[in-house]
Length: 128
Image (cartoon, rainbow, N blue to C red; front, side, top):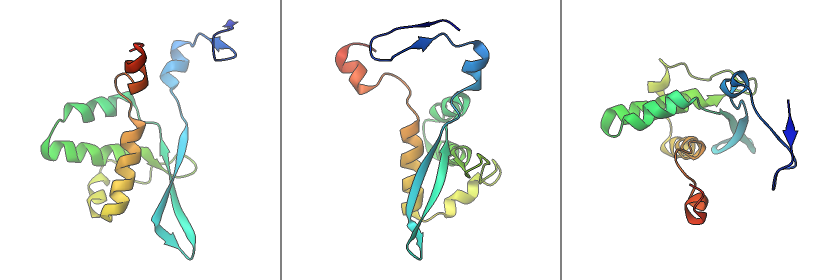
């Protein structure tokens, strides 16, 4: 692959279609202090969401469909250290039984992973 010097980044390269579709497989650790046991904070990992799931969520603008879509996003995002989903699509509805503080923490983290549209910084600098 060809590389070239750019402004801030030391190097850049053009991705192939396969690399782009392979996507970002990063995991983010999320502490769940509400589930601390014997002084040890519980953690889960959040996996990068596929674009289709985010678009489906955005399409469901209100009501029960939107709530179910949020539960589905959480189920897709929450994984163990090996990247295995903790909940199947069918089990997503069980997330309704979470403690509201845990649910809020997960929802905030998952929504924070979803950047759709220009960043506020881009809007302010006109780069959008």
